[in-house]
Length: 251
Ligand SMILES: [Mn+2]
Image (cartoon, rainbow, N blue to C red; front, side, top):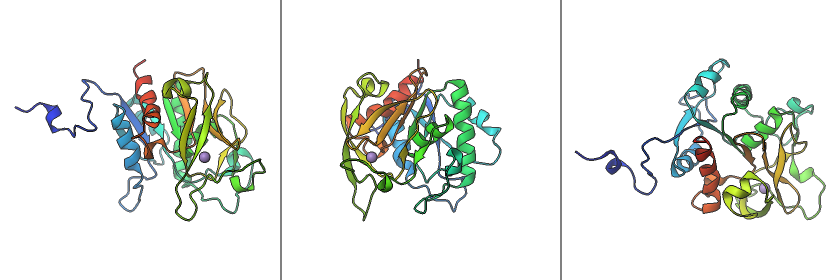
C-alpha cells in the first residue's frame, strides 16, 4: 500500500507527522456567489511553510469565534478592503473601499479572542491594520494625501505591480526570523498605520517612512506586515514570514 506521502505533490508537501493547523480568515461568508480567488496564495504559502491551512469564513454569530479558535494552533488575518474609520474616530475618505461590515465585526471579535488567548497571530495588509485598530491605533486612509519626503507609490496603479525596499529593526522578531534588515517587498496598499496601538512597536518602514510592519514583543507571536508575502513566498525572505507563524505554534 502506498504511503500517504506518495499522494502529495512533492514540491509543497513537507509530510510531517503532525502539522500545525493555521486558521485563515476569508473575504467570504462561504456563499457560492462570493469571490475570494486571492485566497489560494495565502493557503499555499501556509502549506509551503509546513502548516495545514483551515478556512475561517466570516459569519454573524460572534460567539463562534471561540469555537473556531479551539480548532486551530495559530491564525492568519488576510488582506481585504478598508476598515470603517469610525473605529478610530474619522469619517470615510472618498477613495475608501468599505470592507463588508459583517466581515469587519467578525474579524474584530476573532482578533480580540485570539489576543486574549495569546495565540500566535500573523496579519497581512488589512490583517495588519485590523491588529492595530483592535489595539486602539489609527490608520492613514489614503497615502497619496500624506505629506512626506520622497513619497513612494504604494498602490497598484494602472495594473503596474510595484516593489520597494523596507528597513527592518534589527531587534525585531521579524528581522530575526527573516535573517535580514533590508528586504524588497511588493506593495498593494493605499492605507497604512498612523497611531500605533497599545503594546505594539513599528518594526519596518519603507524609504518614505510609511509603516510596513508592527509587532507586540510581549506576545508569543503578534506580527503584522503591510506587504503581501503570500504572493512572493517562492522568495526565502517572504516564506520565512509564514514559517515564523507555523513554528510559533510549536513553542
Ligand atoms: Mn508599501
